[in-house]
Structure formats: structure tokens, C-alpha cells
Length: 211
Image 1: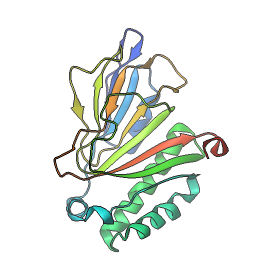
Image 2 (image 1 turned 90 degrees about the horizontal axis):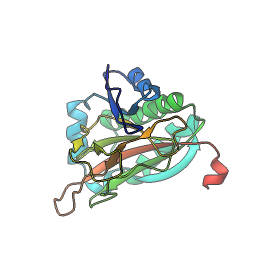
Image 3 (image 1 turned 180 degrees about the vertical axis):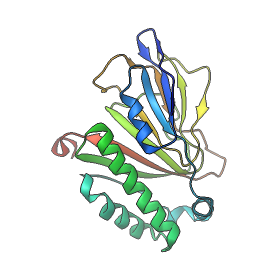
Image 4 (image 1 turned 60 degrees about the vertical axis):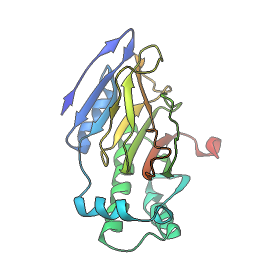
């Protein structure tokens, strides 16, 4: 795993690149604003995802205990009419594994889990999320974009996370200092005909306050 430990004007701007899920723990290192798990979706699964009709892709938003993630993901896929098969099983297993890994990483018992099907410009402005941390994995379409901005201005250089590669980012509520100086956004795709499938995970400390 490689980790750029950098602080500019009291803002963490380092981005770690991990080759395993365990490497995502670099998020807790000083100066690290985000970590990317450098991986690829199996080619046959990627082809399957890319050729599904948009209405067949899972979508939904829920707050749940970490132990209930599998049942929730299965139900979400059922509601969308996602076809049965090895590719669907891989997607379900992967979402469950990411949730399990993420809850361990941030010591959370509950999660906000969201599957978004995006066909337009969603959150196209660069920002930092008002959460302690967030995991984003784009299963289909262009990945999350990010850039360095210690002062909150538009980043001068924009990087795009690889499709299938999870990125974990610090939010504004991250309890440690320095604050994050890394902004991110959903890529602008309006008018391109592109459809994105995105999994988003946030840790929840009190589900009743979030309901």
C-alpha cells in the first residue's frame, strides 16, 4: 500500500492507495484524507452490470444494523428485478463485504446504506460530506471525482476513481485533526446517456436521531 502523508495549511490532503481491503485502515493515519482500494470488478460481472437496463439496477436508502445488510441488499435487488445468477450473487456479496469492512474500519454498529442509480448531474459541485466518513463504490459508470482544495475552492486538478474501486473519505465530522482538504463530487454526466450505479455507506451513531 502507498500513502501520501501531506498537510497543507492545516488541512489533510493525503490520498492512500491500497491493494487490499485491510489497507483502507490508512484513513486513520495523520494527513490522510481518503483511501482508495485499487481493484477491478471481475470482467464478466462488469459486462453484466453495464448491459442491464437502468430500471433493473438496485436503488434504495435505508438505515440498518450492520448484521442486517445482507437481507436488505437482497430485498433491494429483488424489488428492482435484478436477474438471478452468479453476477447478482457477486454484487450482493461484495456490497455485504464492503459494509462489514467499513463498519469495522470506523467502529460503527449501524449504517446508512444507499444504492443510487444516476443518469444526470448529482452533487456535481465539489464538497466534503457532513459525516464522519463515507465509503463510495461506483459499480457502473464513471467513478467519484476528487481534488485537493485546502481553501474550499474548485480543485485545479481533478482525479477520477476507477469503476469498481471503493474510496473512503473523511467528512467534516471526522473527530481528528487536521481537517480534510480533499473535495469530491459525482461526475457530471447529464446528456451523455450514461447510467451510474453507486453504493454509498455512512456510519450512524444513533439510528433514532436519523429516522
